[in-house]
Structure formats: structure tokens, C-alpha cells
Length: 343
Image (cartoon, rainbow, N blue to C red; front, side):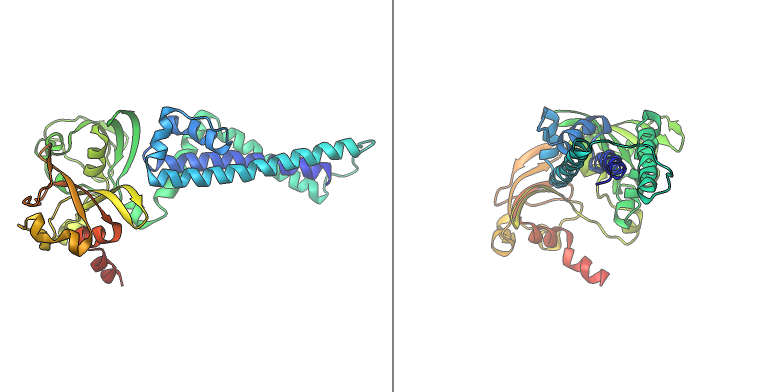
């Protein structure tokens, strides 16, 4: 291989290597992890060093993050093999050449053009690593990813700034107003009572809004909250939008805890009890016989109760259940009906 072409390819591989790390960092950030916590983990995954910390549990405890981590490891391995192959190729080229004449009559050969392009991209990537510029670059990637689909644009985006046990400080971008925050002030939302969530600050455009009892959320607000991580997700992720409220439709929020083949362990926040479960005891609902679903624990008014045969499900309950994931979605979110509407 021509020595100049080999150098160009090495620069190109390193450039795409650095770019891939930025992309995977943003991908993890979109799942709720802060940039500071994830960059170290991405570097560890991408270089296959196997270095782990207690923060790695934030990745292994979430299905989406595990999938991203798997792709990251495979991609990093491919880049590493390609880079080492090029280095070895250059080494043997230098060893086998008795005399290397680096003087040339013209620098317009095709391999020099490739070298110029690779050098330019590498220099641009180094510039993008400068902290202030890197911050704007990551914001660009994040915005591009969020705008890539209608579903993502209408979903509230949560970034975990810090986490302590089950509690977290998080930044929430309100792309869609939660059902409990429509045209009512903060004092009437009962965030602390129903979700164990406290609002610390609100950024609206370029200014910080004073948080008072009369403050109301607006679409596009960026809020900083503190509370139980699961409650933050229940309060702001997949919340009912204005359009859904207008249609008088309420959607139960289903959060996957873990899956075991077709079966899954999930939490379901009940905004509207399904018709076949309204005012019906669990024993009379035949959930086990008809859907193969077992309800274990119910959170009601900040307390946990065991789901006995005589328990009746109410609006506002958070159910922990196990069963076929498809059946859970059909029963609690009328998934089949939604598909019919789209068709």
C-alpha cells in the first residue's frame, strides 16, 4: 500500500472513531444519562478496556442502554481491528522499503487528494473536541436525533444530572404537557403528593422563571426536578399531550422493568382503568385465565398494598405485574385499537 494512502486511511479511521464516540455519547444521553457520567463509560465500551464502575449499573439496568452498549462494543471492535491493521501495514511498508523518497514532483495524485480530505476531517474533529464547541456539537446531534421522528418530538426528554440511590436530580424538556399540568398552577398539580417530585427551577427560552405556587408549565419549558427516579419518569415520560386531552383519550403509562422472552415485568401507571376492570375485584377479572397476567404490588397514595383477590384497581394506582408484554399493552393501552386507527 502507498505510504501516503495508508496515512490518509489512518487519519480517516481516527476521525470516524472520535465521531462515533460523540454519537454514542448522545445516544446514551437521550436515554436519560448525563454527558459527564456517560463519556467515560462510552470510552470504556468503545475501546474494549472492560473498565467498570458503579455507574455502569445505569447502563446494565436499562434495556435500551444495553442495546446501545452492545452496538458500541461491536463498533469499537471493528474500528480497533481496522486501525491496528493499518498500523501494521504502514510498519511493514516502512521496513520493506530500502529507501523512502518523500520528495515528489506533484501533490495532485489521487492518494494525496484523499490525504488532504482525511487531514481536513481530522483537524475539524480536533476542533470539535474543544469543550465550548463540543457542547454545541453535541447539542446539534441531540436536536437532530430528537427531530428525527414525530414520536420523539412529542415525547418529553429527561436527562439525569445526578443520582443517589432511587432519587435523582433531572432536567426535563417539556415537549408535551403532562395531563396533570394543563392550565393549572404548580400548587394544584400535587406533584409532591402524587409523584414525590419537587420542581427546583424552570428555564423558559433564555430566561429563568421564578418557581412559585402560581407558576404554570408551558410547552418547551426546561425544568429541573428532584425526586424518586421512577416517579419522575411516570410524571413526565409518555405523558398525555394536549391533543390527546382534546380527544378525551387517556393512556396508561407502561414502564418495562425487565423482559423474559415474550413475558415481562412492568410497572403500569393507571390514568384510566380499562373498562373490563372497572369496579371489578381482581378475582372476578380473570386476568390470569384470560391474559396470563399476575398483579403483585399496587402503589396507592404513596403506600404499597398487596394485590389480593378482593382488590379493586383505581385511577392513579401504579401496578407492578408480570405476564406476556403484548397482552399487557393490549389490555391497558388498547394497542390493537391504536393500530386500527393508524391503518
